[in-house]
Amino acid sequence: MEKQTINNDVTEEDLKSIFQEINNLSKDLNDLAVDIFKIETAKKLVFTPSIFIFSAINRAIALNKAYITLCETENYITAVGLLRLQADNCMRVYAVSLVNDRGKFFQDVLAGKHIRNMIDAEGNKMTDDYLATELNKHFPGFKSLYKNASGYIHFSNEHLKLNKKTSKGNGFFINELLINGGHNFKIPHKVDFSYNMLLVGTELYKLIKGYRLHIIDLLDNY
Image 1 (cartoon, rainbow, N blue to C red):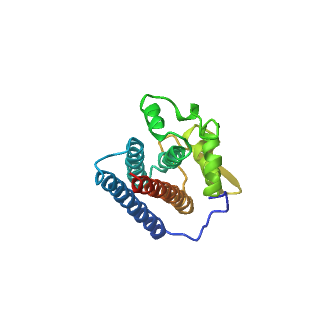
Image 2: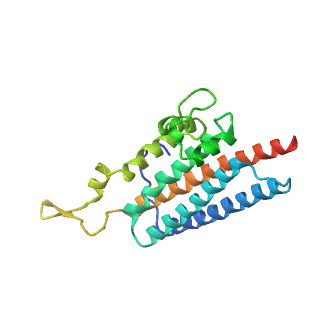
Image 3: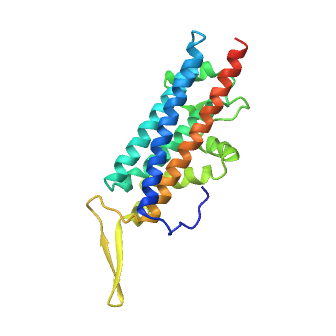
C-alpha cells in the first residue's frame, strides 16, 4: 500500500474481478460475525465488546456495498472517500485490542466518548495518527494508505487535480473545468483505488479473526 507507480496494464475485467472479491469479502465478514455470535451464545452469553465488533462489521459491509454502487454509476470522486472510512474501521477495531478493560471501552464508546481521547494499556492516547502508526507495524503501508485516503475525505489538492480535463491540440493545452460531478479517473486509477479498498477490508477481516481467537481463549477458561 506504499505510494508507488500505478500499474497501467489493467483492464475493465480486472476492475470487475476486484468488485467480485470485495463482494466475497463482505460475505466472509458476515460469516465471521455469525461465527463469533454462535461461539458466544453456545455459552449463553454475548460479550459487550463483540457488539462493538458486530457494528464495525455491519459498517464495513455497508461501505463495501456503497463503494461498488458508486463506482458502477461512475461516481468515483465520492467512492474513493469510503476507503478512508474503511481504514477508520480498522483503526477502531484495533483499538479494542490495545485497552486493558474491553467492557469499559465499549461502555465509554456507547456513552459517546471519542476513542481519540481514550488511553491504551501503555498510557498512549489513541489518536488516529497513533492508531495508524501502530497498525502500520502489523500491516506495512497502512499509514500511507490512511494519509492518502484522507486527501479525498477533506477538500484538498486531490479534488483540484480531479476537477479538470487536460488535452493537447495544435501545440497548446486546453483545460476543461468540471462542474457537473464528473472526474478524470482512468482505468488504472479505478483499479488502484478498488484494490486498496479490498486490501484495507481484508486487513479488517484479519483483525476480527484475531478477536475471534481471543474470544475462544476466554471461553476455554469460562
